[in-house]
Length: 395
Image (tube, rainbow, N blue to C red; front, side, top):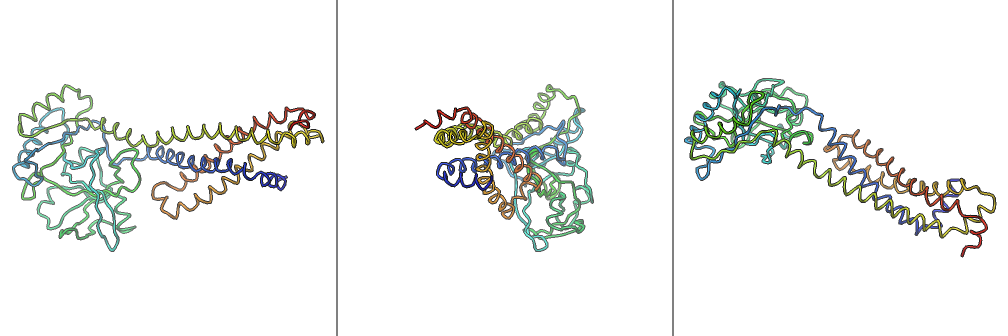
């Protein structure tokens, strides 16, 4: 049976080539869209490494006086932070250069124990972990004991610990960077700065910043953890107080919940657009495939009529047409799978996990076979309904 179908497919190779090309590209597009969608959904349920609930962000604009190492600006911000902590609605206040869900990021690479490790960085203060509710799994967070240290303390997440030091204990590990000795004092769980839809292996490193002492640092962002149930009226009170404390500076208050919504929408947009484009493409392929099969069957009316005259049943004729379509789909899919099998060697598994990739392929197989068989059912049904005598007279 299969040998006979292969012979029929080969005899009409030009017409069937168009069908196979459509199925081939539809399969590749579906694998890409479904794998991306499954990967996105899978990321959503993973821990963030921080808690964004009840966190407000205050962006600071220093204007022409902007200088992160300006002692005067740092002194002003120290006073501002002290006043903010006095509000009963505020539980804690921390600082950050590139807080969670922000569009800004600081990415760099360092050579650690002979390996080049790409990391995302952020300058934060001692209270950042309290605001974002980050608990080290090893070591500790920054504290006053780091003021007199001769080294530059850093806190890394578990992704950096694994990438840089493997299974070794990262606490106390050192590397040189811009004439500074970096030393790991703590390890936190994987930190997903860009939120629920961010990719794996962010490799987050936190550097210590303070508004006091010779290394005073004027922060770009203040993070406030407010008490649950704090209303929007407090935002107006907070804005007025900030401008009273530092009239020469600009302040913009936003809830981290809002930043999270915007960030997730931006990251979900490519998936949504890809889904729409894929749906449109599949719809066009379905209509085109049905038309091509219909035309193909119509040209074979005499052949089909002869089969009917020799005793073939209507169901048998329909099964033959559907089997031919299934064979064409299989040949196109085999070629697609061969190409997709090369992607892991190009580093695909750094973006998606093997189970997600395999699930995307299997789901695409199911969709493609369902579409192609559905497209073959109607032309096959039309062919099976033609009376044998009329088919034999067809020119």
